[in-house]
Length: 171
Length: 274
Image (cartoon, rainbow over all chains, first blue to last red; front, side, top):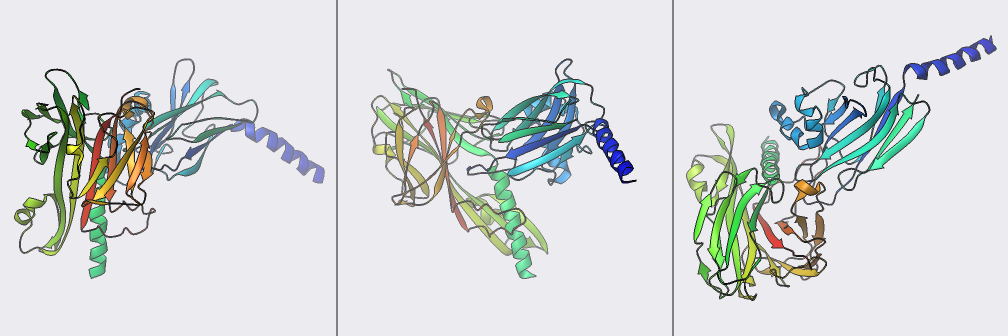
């Protein structure tokens, strides 16, 4: 009995991850010593190496302004704006949310679920772009393969508007 | 109830201040040092988000004042105001250093009229005219602002660098027409002519649009109201200070009421390569 239960657990443990590969991203928003601080707008997306298809993962913008007025500055995330941001209807479920304070923010995406969905196998670049009112703009890129064959951690770092961007992949 | 209204008032006032502050106001001279037989300078006056990119509004030249190398007052040869900028042309008839200033006194008023909260923002001179006499619970906050830049024809001199003695102003202790990248420059901050210690000023280089990162430096004045800037790269810089200092309140915390009187200073300085 005990043995069968163990076996079952083992089967489940090996089966489940294959069904739902995971992409986790940790974004460090640095505290800045500036006279006028506004929280950054941040966009995160995946771009396929061949073909360049874009998968929108997250867009953080000021959602407190009246009449969706915070959308006015979305264009300042210039790369994202050109990579489909311009045509994105916001707010968008599972993608858009409010701006966040300085600190470490973790986002988890699972295969099969929005916004990742059934992402085609291939080489990708994860883009994180930050733009701050009265501040600067910066893009951090992290290359990755999908689906991941093994658990892997990788990352990159910004100079000023973005700190460490850490990507964890689980098969 | 009264205190509730008052704190609402304070919040509303601050919201409009921060909205106004999201943009930067600036003067931009064509050069800080002009040589040759017939020296002229063109100065742009604008408000925008990125320094020194045109894109929001022109600044009115109403409060323009130009001090010549002998300390006298001179008028620009011509001015124009377009969509994104105002400009002035000035013939630098005398050899030496000129100070070009744009001084403004703006007011923000909030009041109750027939039970309804109203807000008004504009020139202090128009306050009486714009706010009805029957207004109740009138609260006014005024800001004395100074935008400044220095331009030299030929050999620099120091007469136009002398303090005005009113509001917030920055006195260059090294000559502002001779700033070089990699060399330190000393400044003294004055409030109504007296040194202002312990205030943090922002030094922001222009060109953020093409550079990406802001590269702003925060410096705090010492006991003598002085600070030193080490210019990292040659370009135009904007130095800004506000008094009383901005209070950064954590999210969800109540904001302190607006001070009745505020001061703001922004100077533009050119730094050349060595």
